[in-house]
Image (cartoon, rainbow, N blue to C red; front, side, top):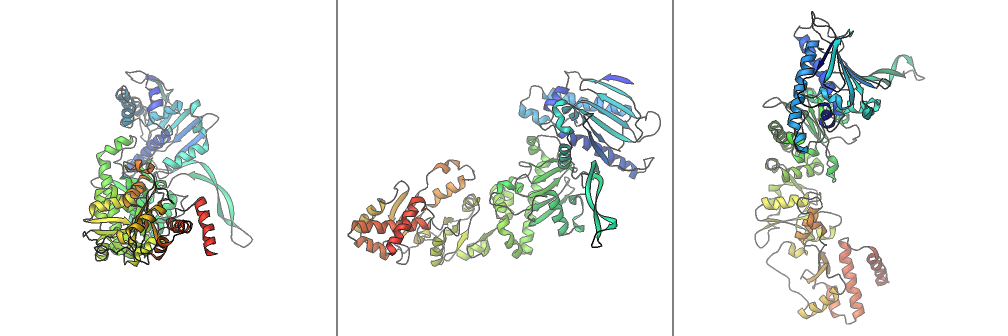
Length: 634
């Protein structure tokens, strides 16, 4: 037996490890199982080289919990360690890393401290975050002197004990004596959750007890003569050791990808639209599969769906800053040994390999979209409504993606027809160029609510785009900056004849005095803080009163709803123009009416009809309008 003291020159490091090593104490299990996988993988490599003097045997890693003894055990059948190797790797190398960590750690701010985590090979010592005492029982694969099984024990102080033990089988067992404040790690369901979270795709089978399942009996039949379903108990294997992203794309079918998507997201019932299989080995290593989901209007709920792995070990599902922000709307898996396992997000964001990987993923996403557009435009158009937010987000936020996306981004009009940017420019050039030679893109944000305005614009031969996503305000802004001599105007931003200003203007059938008198009548019936009354000469067939909302202020308020620097606009009141058409028969009738009561009633009815078309008539005003309408019909 050998007693010793770990050569720690500073104060006891264990309290520091326990408090600060990882923000999530649960990470200890990932670290121990990663070590077990490494030991097993090394053994398999030795066996493939003919350097193993025994059968490889069953290499399943076993995890077990003993509530009575308050222990958690991780057992592997890997290369194992000799007493000399334990002294080297556990007492010297790992702890020298721990010491360096402590020296760097002291005097740092909390942010700086978090950036240090993971640089020092501290994986094994994360055990002490949850354990009062840790035992190692190990037997090496080697033969000959100095290869007897050995036991190492440490109680969370610099003192340790090493002696021989009676372990007969090759490999290593780590036994954690769980501390009183970490009893959750003795609960079966908690460990099962952690194993599924961190170890779901590790390359070595991991067993955690047994599970009961139903299988068809080979001997018994049911009443219909079919094999009877019987309950059987089987080893509970946690992981899929050969996940789809590690396989060659040429050997996979579309159904394989859909099945894997369901494996990743068992509670998601919609199929993905399409996928990208990544397989790069130079200048960095990267494999993975990214899926395009149907992006909902509330796109925030889509985030945190990309799972980041390092050699099949789960790292995080919060990849903001690691990949471009718009790519966080995708689902799937990224796996790279070039992404450090135990470092802070700020470190990851500044890592050069991470930046290269991020740029490559952006390129592959653009390649895939362009490929579908070029080779199957009809299919691309069918999926457009489901991927529109994703593409717009990328074009707004990522210049390199924008350059590529301009070739396949689409406009959709109210007729359901699709156009590339260049195609649409040619389509509207003759009819929607104003007197200043600017091209005016008319759009609607809600086909149903703005239907009367859409119909009025279509009556002039105009085309109207559908721009109805939460991002479209920002997207339109970005397009106006890129398109030469162009502007975007919503169909209800002005009366139809002023949406696209032409040279000719209709004369008014009312005199200036009549317009002044009616202005007073209309102003008395509206809230002047919100509505500005004006007269515009329109056709006799246009509506007598129209409510419009100025483009600039309304768009800024729309953009403020999702941030982007316009939040202050959200508190601004809504302002509208109440535009009176002096050429409509009813307005002429109003001007000729001498009875003040009749004039006021008719004016109020016309105002309410205009408000109704903008969905602005509500509550008691709507009730009064209905009652008044019934009286007029009588």
